[in-house]
Image (cartoon, rainbow, N blue to C red; front, side):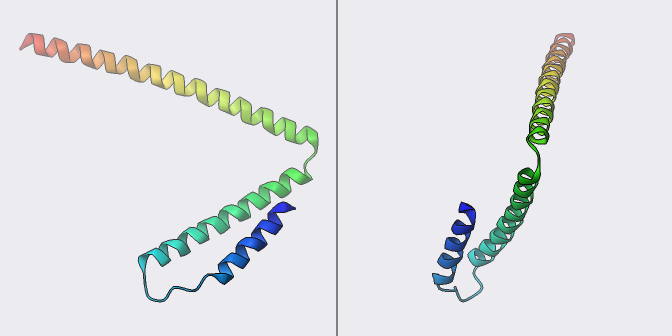
Length: 102
């Protein structure tokens, strides 16, 4: 409910600002950023409505799924980091062997 009031305030602030004339790069960047913000706001509103219409059990279940996915991703990251370090060490050893044989 508070967001609606904030959005209205932001709209009032935008209406009060004078329009910039000319073809400035900053104005184009602001327009692009405003477009991205509108898409994010629409996505947030969709998620908020989804959560508001979900039961407590559904929300808890989603939270557990997200936590599980996070745990799996952390484990995968650690595995890949370890594999990378192992390969790096092997490469270093091989480079040393090559240098010794020259």
